[in-house]
Length: 112
Ligand code: SF4
Ligand code: SF4
Picture 1 (cartoon, rainbow, N blue to C red):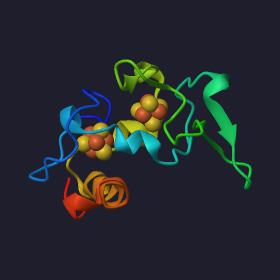
Picture 2: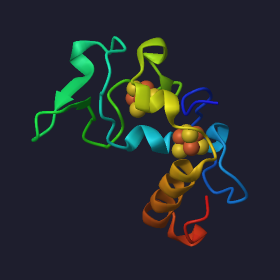
Picture 3: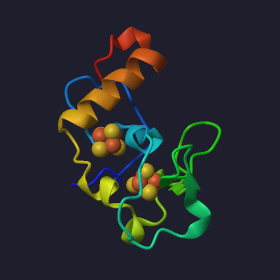
């Protein structure tokens, strides 16, 4: 399952396991390098200080391509390779959720 299959901005405090359906699209707040051409529209592409292409992010941290009404990827068919390979429940996902919860939900002790 990919990170953006089912992302709902709902309860973020279930610390039993990582699920996209109860996650605030945390992985869509991470820096996403564009390393292959998957057809990401130009207006969603930024260039970092090293000259590499990344997904543009808004001031609040989320990827510019995230649909804020559905909290799902608006360019799903053209999303970068990194997004395709980011798997729910694997180490990166668990780590991202833990770091996010420590910062935003300290009462959960990093256990989303
Ligand atoms: S961080 Fe993990 S659980 Fe949350 S949306 Fe991304 S893949 Fe799904
Ligand atoms: S391109 Fe889509 S899946 Fe990738 S970070 Fe942005 S909203 Fe999330």
